[in-house]
Length: 554
Image (cartoon, rainbow, N blue to C red):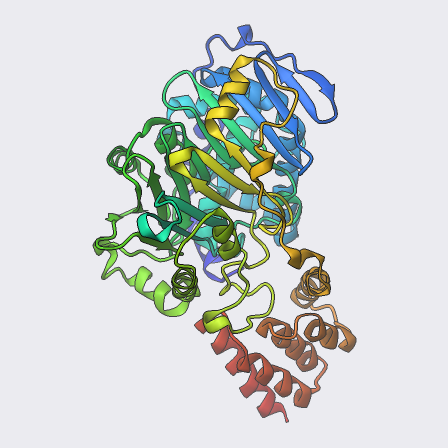
């Protein structure tokens, strides 16, 4: 972890951790009438469940298709009952990731108190409707983590995990990239939107994916690509042809949680019919991290960026152009002189990915969904330079939770099946899907299979298999180095053999040699790392520092 985190924890301990925490741990929404709600899930098979008119079906791509309707409590209870195994799987995956990052039991105990203190006011910033929905889901959460926080409070906390992960940049990979194009940039002039969602909380977290179709008692019907227990939106589209995707911006470490970004995005999907209404919704909510919300509008045939942060608000809308690109820095006038944003542009990989996306869109002048997917899967850097596999400078970092493509004017969406965004992109038509669900239980996939986009040929190659081996080896090596466990020299050479164009493979190999006091080979490997496309300026500085240290040892 970065050194700033323990400092913040120390400050919090002096402030008094118990302040306001007990009240927040005991907080519950209004749940009047919950005892009258049907909770009896019918298990038709291992891949098909129903509860009243609600249902959950697993298609042959491994994607769960969820349909929910009713008021907030009804939706929450149905969601929790139908997806209970998926909720518990995601929570276990997330908590195991936390345990791996913080192996000390005593430190985790302290962290639990800090998390409770940090989130003590979150419920004040979450709409009562969404509190009720989360409460309904929480009734089916695992009992294994009740010592961390009560189930409802825990489920509420997890809706802020995306925000905290982006603020810390140690919990999740931060590298989402998205684009929108319309008019002469697309083959039928219609609005087309694509994005990669690079939120990483471990391999287990990304295994179970849900495409949820929600028919609430108020607002718009909508779909979202999500996971068990999550009612917030990271990628979604409503019946009016409004789409929402979120991209993290550079954030300070917040000291108190407010509205999770995913719940702001959810409110936009559920209640907005155009970009003006989306802006007004976003303006009303206090957030605790910086985020770009790309909103596409079928009616207006355009996309805009709503750029929010705890102390600022901006809207970016292109003029004399028919495309918008979004990575992880802000573009509106409101942030033109923002020091954090300028630093992100200067030192991170956000501007590089922005430029690469611009390059790819220029090369593919007339876009369609297939070409959009090809762009999302692109693994090379500017001017097609090889980045190695797993480099955050790539549009496709081979680590995304999902890729998604929207065609809002036709209410069509394509979502990626595993692995990453390299599996088949499965097509759905919102109007057709909701029509089927509302007629009664479907007991089949509602996907438009004939419109599916095939999986990438890359996942059948030896290079992909080598990358999967590399990821496991890299994880093991980093874990050993962090715990001062000696690493065999053979692993150094295996790293660079499995991923020879990736700077970090050479860097880790150099560290292994350095730890073995083989400073000559350490210098060689650090210099090889420096010759490749290094991800960020701080990474470049780390390499330069290790080269100097190695030379001093020779």
